[in-house]
Structures are given as C-alpha cells and as structure tokens.
Length: 224
Image (cartoon, rainbow, N blue to C red; front, side, top):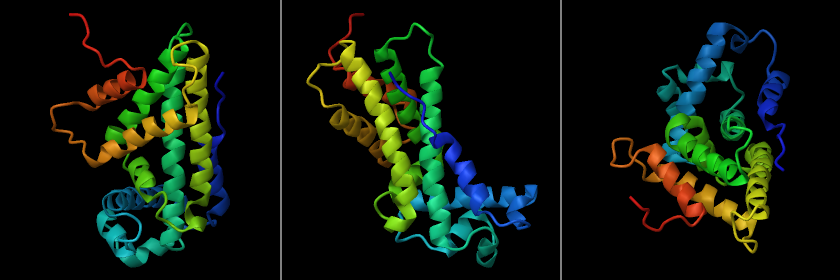
C-alpha cells in the first residue's frame, strides 16, 4: 500500500521558519512581489540552467529592480533553494491528489497510471517552478539542492510503492525492478519538457496517455 508523504507541508514550515519578521514579504503586496520573483526565476532557470542564471536575469524576468531582490531573499542560492524545494513539493502534491481522486474500487494499475499521467501533465502544462526545479537538480551546489534532494527521494519512494503494488497484483511482471522502472518513467516525463510544443500535433493529455501505455506494455494496435 502507498503512504502519504509529509513533503506537502514542508515548504510552508520552512519558509515561515526562515522568514524574518516585518519584511516586505509578510505583506500581501510583498507576497505578490515575491511570487513574481519566484515565477520569473523559474522561467529563466528552466531555459538557462543554474550557472547561466544571474540575479539581473531574474529581476528582469520578474519586472523588478535588481536591488529590490534583496528585500525578499539573501542571495541567489537562497531563492533557488526555495524554488527547488517548492517544485518537488508541489509536484508530489499534484500527483497524490490525482491518485486519491480515483474511485475506491480503482486498481493498483489505475493508481499507477494516474500517477504517471499526472506527473507528465504537470511537467508539460502546469508549473514553471516544477520544470525549473528539475532543470536545476544536479547543477546547484550541494548545500543549495540538499533539501530538494531529500524530497525527491521521498517522491521516488512514493512512486516505487505504486509500482510494487501493481507488481503484486499482477499488472506488471514480477521481475520488474521498481526503482529502474520509476527512473525510466519519471526521466521520460521530465525530459519531455525539452521537446514538447503546446501548439504541436499531440496534446499533453495524449502524451501522458502514451507514457502510461508504454509503462504497461500496451503499444500493440487496438481493435476499432
């Protein structure tokens, strides 16, 4: 059986603990500006990666002055640490919501399929921050990406548990390595952001369905 992860609550707890009192970020206007900065940073990071992204780039993308960034963060690393953590927290929450929204009589195959499709859709259409978090993973210094790596590990365990459930119920071959299959599935979904075009011939939902079919070996012609 799968288990809920505490990852969803960790971002708000972390931010409240780290945020100094009486800063502009504690006001509604400050929160709005901080969110613009976060979204701007995500767009730049998703395209350029960690090393090529500067605070000036982020400020320009967010529509704020470069000097004002320091009202909302200590430095570039502080911002990217929060962004990477938020990216995986929100991805995990979105996927879990998709699985939990299934009917009670859903099979383990249904649950794994819902998780795969949700992860793919989220990467392609829902969240610049999630895409930037994936792009930055492995590029940022260890002290910056450390918290996000722990959350990625928790998410990986969640996905592997879904795969193990499907194996136990006979929907996947018993000799399948759950970790390897999970890495193949999530790796394919994450990499799809490099080539996906919203105006292309295939929709995000269509691509998500195709990945689910690949996971279960359902690539033979279907009867009409």
